[in-house]
Image (cartoon, rainbow, N blue to C red; front, top):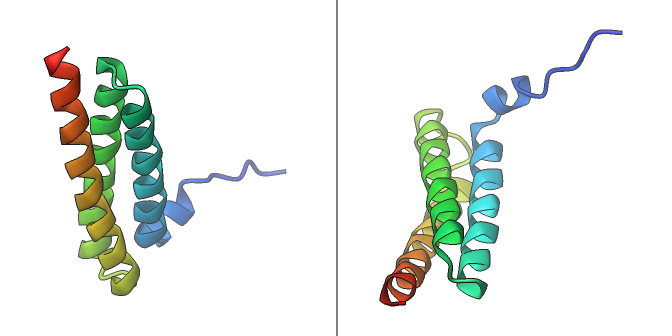
Length: 92
């Protein structure tokens, strides 16, 4: 049986990839908010960067723009939250 590759659907559905990456970033930011430590903040920034790349990809493909738009707004909120957490971490 041929080994199924899970990368093909990502290329087919950039908006799905974007949604998934925003959800991962959301979890990472929540983690950093509840445990404001340098490593958690770093992880959240990496997740946000990944989501940002997925956003650009989704926009280039003109994917379901309403979903993409919601995710862009969510991403902006997450960036605001993580910068607040980073300030807390740097103060300690």
